[in-house]
Image (cartoon, rainbow, N blue to C red; front, top):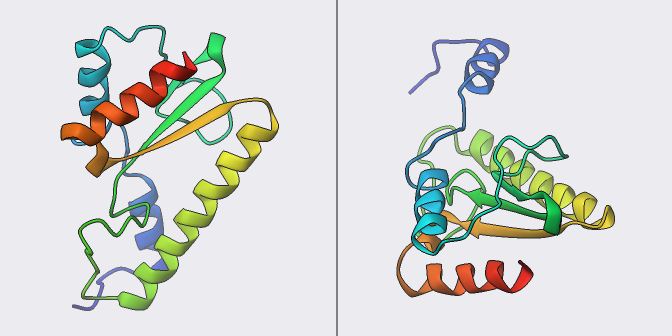
Length: 135
């Protein structure tokens, strides 16, 4: 399918989409924190990379990354149209994530990245245990 918008217009449209409150990522993580009585986290904390959750006193930043948008191949989901664009976009997202993680660690922060697919079942318990160890 051919895009009806020019590249610059499509870019502005896509960048205006808010990535907050996603039910399969951020909201699920909040539910897990509450179920496990993990408190002290903050959202929308002003540090590099805009982590989804920050524990300021412990200098712990948590990113809850959607599997598709951040290039995790757990479901092997590949775009069927505009393939070159999406490959480039996802590679850029992965590189940006790596650079943000590195920058935060250089500034004394612990960084945990949680994949969307890790928020279910036994994997979520392992991630929560990793978080608890750092708290």
